[in-house]
Length: 555
Image 1: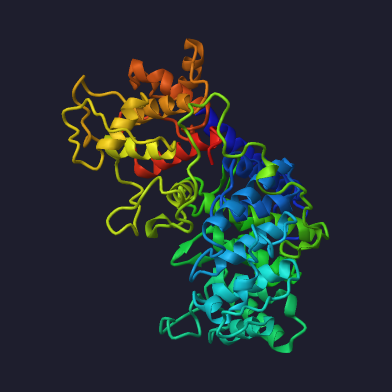
Image 2: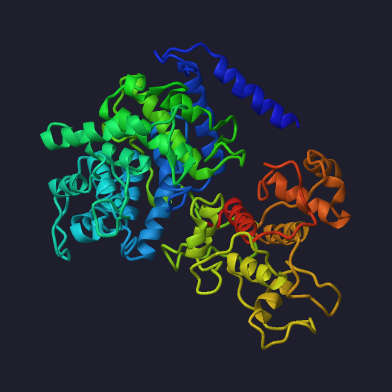
């Protein structure tokens, strides 16, 4: 209860600071804005220790930290750049065959940290955006983010020899304009044959379109479309100052309109965007969870990583506009990081000094691996990072990950031994693990390296679901193989577990393992319970293993 009380008091304090914006009600003061940025940037930096190539826990986190002014060690950006190089090399420079926003997102992040996107491990990541047809394939997102990313560094669009139609900036601008809906706004597939019959303006896509068009207000047609889009978004803004998308009021929709106004140079107290409940910024702050980022909706479901990352860059956009700095996407003042590639993080991916000789980093073999049921999931970064290395797989036809499904003991043994890159063993001591089964070698390997124990001297129970305390024990033993100090003094164990209401339910044999996992943040202490006897979920397993590999310098 202490942590909840502290968060509530901190939030109340933020709201109590006197306003400085000329908004008629519940305005957010300069001091509250600055504190929310500092607090959220700290949360993002603390949560995303090793940013990977990805829409969550990747480029947005890197970009916003670089644009925030928050003090981040340069090695953080250097290690991210090394991860990008590894990823680009693994996929031969092809980040995705269809979703070209993958290139745009990486270009944004690299520009923010002063890196050249035209030469990443020998590949020019700008070149794909020269293919007009492929860039617009995924809907309006394609041309929008192509324009934004190209304009962040004022990059020329390279000639793409493989393109059926060579793109130009004007072509992308015209594409956005021709997709305008009758009501004045935009939607993902508006203006195309894929659009629903009764399309209406979507606040997210309309906000993004306005961001892309912001630099082209000298064109009369762009100026006209901009004013029409602003008018419909003023009309759609609700009495609380926010927006709904897909029938639900959410923070991300507010974010995109905040950034749009900032890119256009329109103050947030513009009368068109102040409603009974206040401004867009006032609305966004209702989703703020001090110390824990932002929530997606106001339903009380807690923080959401995607919502947090988007909210942070919106706050930064507001701060930059307030302070007269170049806007979020006008990166003339981008960081100039000097470290680059693997050299930026000494020994990156080589493991800890005391690791077992057989433990090794698992390289990326399936770049771009993703699952249909993981969109905006809090464990998305971990799942995608492990899938890219072939450590975890989907279910059925591999298009789904089933994040809330349980995991068997055999499946757990398989992903842990894969995650550590251990050589396979074949000699099994368990009668219920036939040599003909797919899990025979993973179980034999896990037993050989003392990661697992049996239910008895001769049985393993491979099909049994694994409990949270069992998972902690296996992960802790794997951590010892990685060279981590897993010893816990009794006082340390008590201190780590006594913060949880149900710590007395932990088995005696599991307490030291659980305490180690919480101490090293392999398991997170966001909740008030350990739930040691609950079945652990697939997404939770992925996060634990990702956290272990990160802590063991194996990513």
